[in-house]
Amino acid sequence: MRQVTLCNGVKAWSASPSKYVQEAVRNLETYLEKQGKGIKLPKRAMAPWPNDYVSELDDTPELGATMVSHYQSLVGILHWMVELGRVDMIVEVSILASHMAMPREGHLIAAYHVFAYIKRHHNSRLVFDPSYPEIDMSVFTSHDWKEFYGDVQEAIPPNAPQPLGKDIDLRMYVDSDHAGDKSNRRSRTGYFIYLNSALIMWKSKKQATIETSVFGAEFVAMKAGIETLRGLRYELRMMGIGISGPSYIYGDNMSVIYNTQRPESTLRKKSNAICYHAVRESVAMGESLTGHIKSTENPADIATKVMANGQKRRNLVNKLLYDLYDHGHDNEDANSPARAEPKQYEG
Image (cartoon, rainbow, N blue to C red):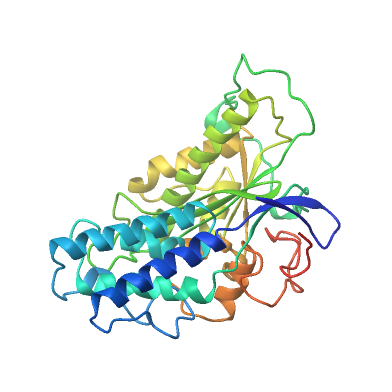
């Protein structure tokens, strides 16, 4: 941890796993050299994932017991990097972890590719910006929900201490792919949660059920995110931290946002009923508000989909991490999670 000064003059704490990343890469390269098989990390890994590789359809030979242990060790190291803030490879590490029980040679090569990527891009910094975000309230709408859910209210801990200091804002960017797993067509949930302008929680996980529509998969993802936010709001209050209002939730599926903003909308598929009503009830009790954001501006997109190196991926990563790429945030809108150019700080 070290303190940095953002380009807006705000002082903030930051964390970087750069030294851990470089040491892990060195250890792996030393291991490969000792094996004497001529295997080396790829020289050009612009993105974490090999181009056009589909891990769930990999039919290469299974690894032997020794190499299985090696693979599991690598995935464990990568998982810890994600925990330390390398959220730019969250979905790739999640996919590798799903093959821990029976990895194949192709999966190991994909793991080496991720290490080649972090060797090239080891310099990242997660900055815990305490600044209050500029929230465009025109994105959100308020309605009377009593006819549909009665006089529901958020569960406030009765024994919470008196809040001290300033209240905080909570925001979540949520997304889902649809039927992304080609072996069983399960979708993936991804979200990033911000306390003020600081990224504090993230998740990328395959959904437990097979959703037959984008609408259903997006609602499953939003329900999972809202449940996490609900627990977080409770914990913060128990620590004496005040919350200024509802949690602001951004999603890029217009149909889901429409159905969570308007009480009169109706559900046509009963299979989505639980997630549908759970999210709407959260909005009805004033615990959450949902708003639409473009897919190109939704950082949760990289928590649900494997992306090749390109401008979209770089832009989304730069909304989450500082220093990974050289370009800044000149074209960001007011709802962007990151609010300072990545190269303009002092530490």
